Length: 305
Image (cartoon, rainbow, N blue to C red; front, side, top):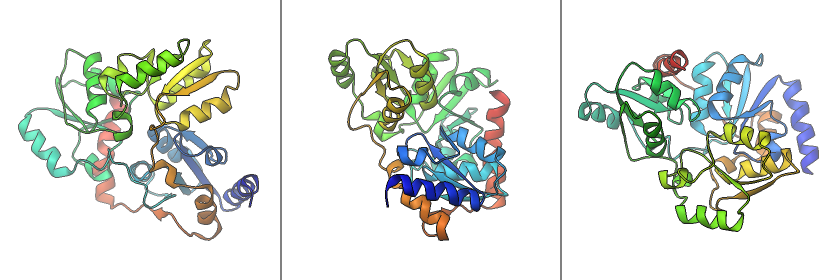
């Protein structure tokens, strides 16, 4: 079956079965084109909460589907690829965070939204990459333990120097692998291009950027900018989406290694199979107690942000 035919089937089935399809910006273009909404992880969970459908298919990774379930516990939430995890979200556990609290007494634990539901239950506030600086600035506490991404934590610390911000050695292995040398080489190859980067990259990469922001912010900046060439310092799917959306501009990858294999696990065929007869994917099931506890730092984020 051709891609266009499969897309037409997915569009028909989701309407017939009253299903909302949410896709993270890092998934394949052919999936994004049939989704009801495409965006960053927390944006997706908010859209799921507001949509009228009672069943949601999340095309992304597990922590995103868990966040959808936390905000919409009454809905059936299906992760499109059961094995799609996130190394950053899964690298810390509850015990490690509790030990860190003892080492840094009196701190408020700020968790990047890219954490598991279980880890959220022992945190004080969640943040997104776009809201982290504002929320930490607005918090009354001066002592902050930022988890799990040390690169985003260091970026927040550079923007909020009046707070005592500590962080743990964790983060996105894909973004963290990018080097200053790769940036300089990309800039030399494309001297007229602006360099747009995600704050999950290491500080020596971020400091060379013309713009630093979340995935959505990078895309919005590129679309609105009068510049015609851009080096994209985040997952390479963003470069592909931008090339479709802005055919008059040129987009270059910072590195061919900027690929999240977990995001690539979902195929258009997976989505079709779930809609056809429920094959594949995995329904996200969380206990009422976990949902209640994991919701608290998200509510705190909304209060501060």
